[in-house]
Amino acid sequence: MSRVRDYETPPQPADAALPGARTALFLLAGINLFNYLDRYILAAVEPEIRQFIQGKALAAGHPLTEAAAKAMTGSLAMAFLISYTLAAPIFGLLADRMSRWLLVGISVGLWSLASGATGLGIAFAAIWCTRIFVGIGEAGYGPSAPTIISDLYPLRRRSSVLAWFYMAIPVGSALGYVFGGMFTHDGMFSSFFGWRGAFFAVVAPGLLLAVLCFLMKDPPRGQSDAAVAHKVSLADYFLLFKTPSYVLDTLGMAAMTFAIGGMAFWMPGYLNEARRVGSLEMVNRYFGIIMVVTGVTATLAGGIVGDKLRKRFAGSYFLVSAAGIFLSVICIFLMLRTPFPRAWIWLALALFWLFFNTGPSNTILANVIHPSMRATAFAFNIFLIHVLGDVPSPPLLGYISGRWGWGFIFSLVCGMMVLGGLFWLWGASYLAADTERAPRSLGERIV
Image (cartoon, rainbow, N blue to C red; front, side):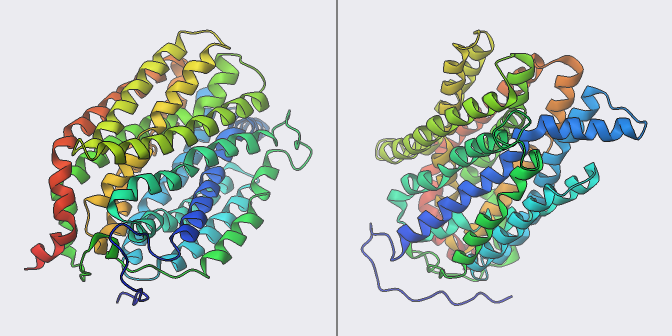
């Protein structure tokens, strides 16, 4: 497939963003917020979907144990992640060869319709299938969005700008918990189709965002990096796995994704069932508010700190990411041993330090890969961090909590977070050389 011709733009100062950068950033951040809102509605209403599944099984004469029911609802997250993970490399290859905004618009429309279809599911298998299509839709968006932003903003500002984009992750996730909680049996919108209403309500806004994408134009690839465009061959993709910063950053993100993916999915159930903090609606609301505050402040702070320290430490993005995840482990440990309501403080700090790495760790990916294959690099990163991370963790942790109790899963979660931090520390010594090499790496490979 031949690459579409990017639109022309006049030369810009080295540190200037390209025309239309703020509009594109605002729209992509809004879509990213909606993306995670869609994902975490499922986590917010998981206990009620679990009850629905158990009720159907009991009516059919095949009652489910608590461990089996939790494994089944956990597999709904796995269904989304499997399709998302497998489809991402395909869409990454397409994004390096055609209009990324077109792909984003189609993807947003698809996942919005599939989310609405989740609310129509009358059996577990039907719900499971709709989550597959949500994953396919989001796979078209994931590799494209950060590469558009990377082509609009210069390297020295990239971590701070990407932090604004990734700030939508905690905000959207939090809104998913809060919004989903409103449709649970004790929520204010429980009379509107119950938990199904939460999925119906996201369709129209998603389709509107999709339409706006079709009005946007692709920025030129590589201009912000002073890189020459290259037609990428199959052999060039092996450069990804010969770039130490890319490999170690991906391994660190995979370990973190295992931990945060499983913990985020089961946290409302843990707070409601194990710690008896309050009703499911109240737990989702409080947890969502904490995620908004800590996620916004930590994601922006991490991006800014990473950019500031870059002048003093060549591996600053790796160091900031590692420091944040180690501090988060300490706060999780203290949360487990502190009674509520004081434990909310440690939970908030754990989330703050966990989100601190979001901007820097993704900036590493953008900075160490040639722009002509950047979308594919993000796609392979998505594939690996989910295959090794949150594809197995929700059903695995659900089964463990149902079999041996909630406490055991946090030891596994914290262990994976420590492992991720160690990978990031390892990568710090490679970052400067890999960043310097990236804009000319394909030229050297072709010659």
